[in-house]
Length: 156
Image 1 (tube, rainbow, N blue to C red):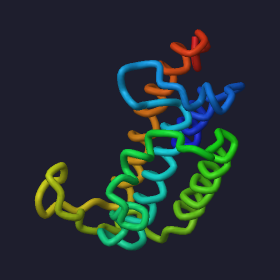
Image 2 (cartoon, rainbow, N blue to C red):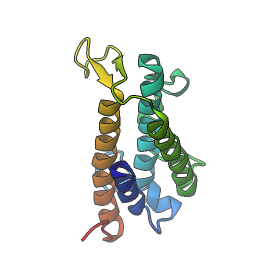
Image 3 (cartoon, rainbow, N blue to C red):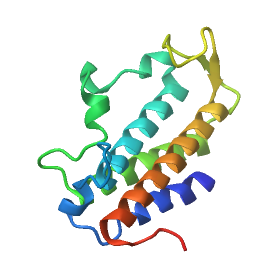
Image 4 (cartoon, helix red, strand yellow):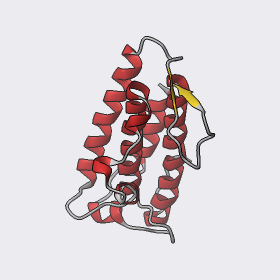
């Protein structure tokens, strides 16, 4: 329920935006509202796969090294409606995983990476909390970008 709430905060930042507005950068970073929705969907799907498959799930789409950076941008041909629809599909899949997972203590080792503690493992519970943290953090980013676009705020 808490993850769904924070997904809603992220979705709310996109209300009423055109594709052009959703793709617009309003800060010096590459971040845009549509790109953040796309990124959060990609990361959530990847971490949900980690819960089931373990470290082998932690590769980017098709092994494309640019997939991670492109996940922050709306590319030619992408629409806000399409990104939101995909995000809903990912959220539904994750929610179904949570409903059917027999044990939140199921753990997998993290893949070797400079940002992970060597030899660490994450449980399904820890991984779901990480998805929540990512979603919350990026909803805040999207809120700042949206306010910079047209003054609209998600809250307050």
